[in-house]
Amino acid sequence: MFPTLTGNGRIWIYVANRPLTETESLTIQERLSVFCENWAAHGNQLTAEFVIFHNQLLVLGVDEEVEAASGCSIDQTSAIFRQIDKEMNLDLFNRMNLAFLDEDKVRLVQLPEITQAFRVGIIHPQSTFLDNTIGVLSDLRIRWQVPFEKSWAFKRVKSLESS
Image (cartoon, rainbow, N blue to C red; front, side, top):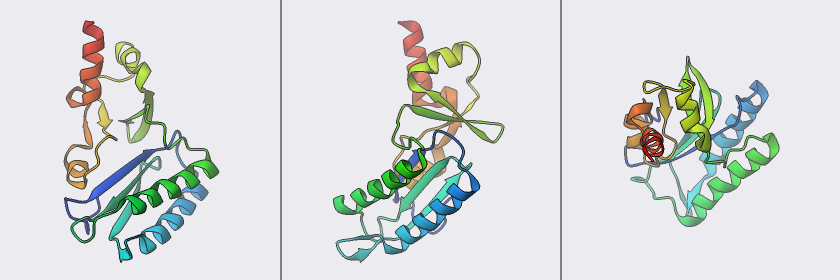
């Protein structure tokens, strides 16, 4: 993922509340392509790429070894994703949506419901958890997709079960 960006790149992961339609996916690809081509910090072009993963997760990366993203340029990312979110009603800024891969499809579990989902077997220790809290490209490549039992979310479930 992001073969032209270095490991020190910064990333932002947005989880849609449902799979994108083909039209939505094409629209997002077009907008983010234009955004990446024109994205700058203090007048300097940023080297950026994006990926739509499993038609439901939007990942934007920037190579900060080339040029660091500044506060204003980061605000621009929020603005483009808020615009997409508003137009398509994707709930991209809901950080309570935890993502799992289930036979190549994204399954969302709300953070407050994760313990119950684990108890009833919707998710299990070997479920593939997508850790959308990571913010560095090297982590995305190494530890974005992990077994649930190796995630911070599993530790939370275990701590709630023992209390």
